[in-house]
Image (tube, rainbow, N blue to C red; front, side, top):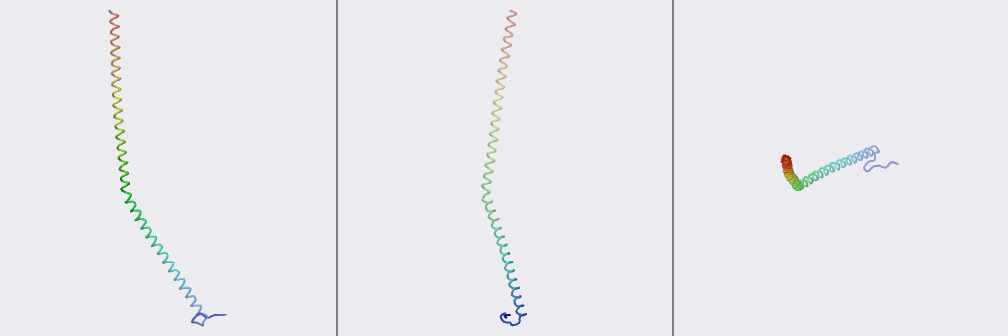
Length: 126
């Protein structure tokens, strides 16, 4: 049996009113969904901005430490290069001294040999 909707006795009118109510409910739901999405987007944007600002702040805080680390690394590199140069100079000096001693030794041996040969010749001639 047919039951009338509040305020009407016409079935067609009641049906139209029900359809209108459903349409309005659907529109409201769509609008709420749209607003929810926009709010989410806005929140997401704000969050991203905050994250970006936080990252920037951290980078700013980190910069002096990184610069200090880079400076120390540069100093260490320079120190190592100077140490290598010093060692190379010492090595060159040592080698030069060794060569000089060797030449002196060879010269001595040569003179000794010449002296012996001279003595031999004098002995033979003598």
